[in-house]
Length: 177
Image 1 (cartoon, rainbow, N blue to C red):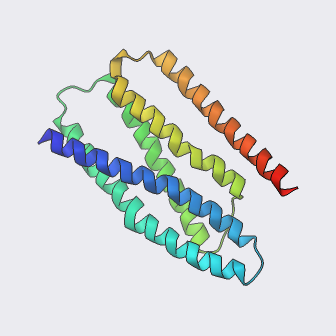
Image 2: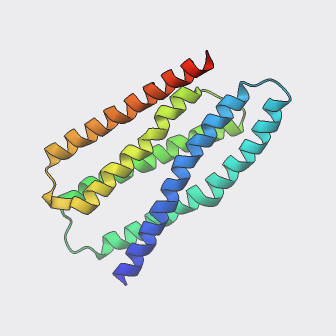
């Protein structure tokens, strides 16, 4: 039974992350569409809003809930609770907090409120990547992983991601000139 529950958990983690990655891209497109002139603005916002709602309520939220159900089920099957699992669960709690922050952005954008620039959303989009790397590394490597090296590696990964975002912004601004 454990392997079936684990397989379903992994499947819904994958679909949840797919939704998390794509929803922020749609937020970025919404923010950029909001800056366009009419009639393009209305046409784009209507289509992007439809896509955003379908992704959020049809894939991302159901996957987050099913991930939680199957993850909790797996957790109840553990006899002991190793340190790596407790650290992973801490990251998972923060991942759900991230998910809820995206829900706030979703509600704002669906109400026509665009508080964040496309650049700010691009940075926020990478948070899911950081969680993915941290959680997968913990699950796969477990106890054999040095926590100091793991934290250093995660910090370097974050620096590389943020540098890539800055380089992309620079290249876009150069191309626009």
